[in-house]
Picture 1 (cartoon, helix red, strand yellow):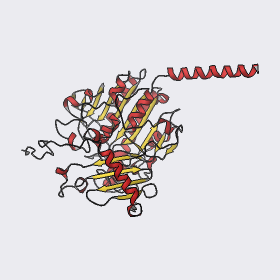
Picture 2 (cartoon, helix red, strand yellow; picture 1 turned 90 degrees about the vertical axis):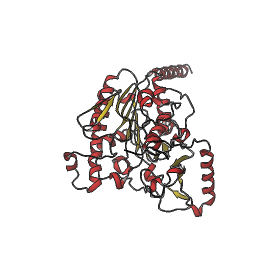
Picture 3 (cartoon, rainbow, N blue to C red; picture 1 turned 120 degrees about the vertical axis):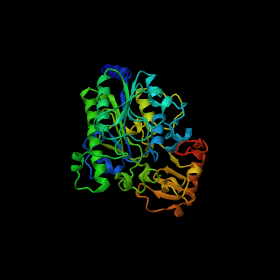
Picture 4 (cartoon, rainbow, N blue to C red; picture 1 turned 180 degrees about the horizontal axis):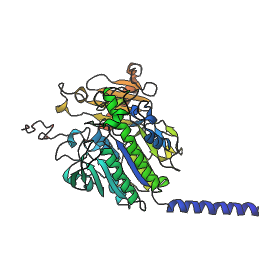
Length: 451
């Protein structure tokens, strides 16, 4: 009895000491690697076979791969969702257009992840693409201490003009190499305090360019796919340098890393691949919104695991905040993925996910690209996905059994279709419709004619 009591007491003290150490442990560094216009067929870990991505695959293999990961159909809404943890439709962003003008910006009342983390002692940096507002609405005004990159939708691959802080200059080299170098410098310079580093690589966005040495590696591929392969392989090396900088700084076990794409690929334009999925960027079919996604945090997030339930880029905010021990300042839609990824919870993170795209009647014109010519709606619930395009009848797919969305089963499940449409209607009633001002210089009804 005495021995048992002593053993119990010792066990209790050990548990208390472990708990105190856990509380005293410094918050992790957080790195978000967001690539541009890559589909699941472009990375080895998500099913790609013709472009080697060993460094990205290593990152994914050392963490957990989310096999049913979603974003929005285009880059600005995804970036807004990731940094706010909220559906961007809540604050009037459904596609890129509101953010493509010279004075356009995301609602300044939205609280961004870098703002929250900076208030809790994090040093913050954006390296790469912003695309969420210009001038007084740039990254330095939205929670980032440092900025090196570009503001709008697209940069330049070779010898790009980049902004450092608020100063623009031309930098010799390949854009994603330059971003990897700057990110690595930031990591090395902040090894003693927690940091949040958001890297927005350019690959494989327009306007595509490739160096001859990179193209020469892919002579077996043709046309646009060869160009995409050269760019993606170069991206892979850049990701490898960032991960190497984390290891060299001794920060491996103290760094939570997310890797994902901002939307699906655009095969006819970019040569990128959505694997088995139909549709592409600017679409709510799987090809437009289902992306490669991996989470790595050695010792916390299991290595070598594949997580099947649906997740969304809105979950990055909630997961990062929870890891940092920080409570969001406002209500968010995202979910902390850590208890799901490490097995503490066996439930699905989301009951449903929703999409609305192109909900702006003045721009639904039949002479435009068909992906921009009709309102797009989607709902994901379990293995089911509802898709409504314009005035067409709703379609229902079992996307786990039918990832190519080839067989519409709406006629066999009318009650499910109506239930999912009803859920969308209730969700949509809480959203803020997107508004494009009449005088928007690119998309406005009364835009000024070009000279």
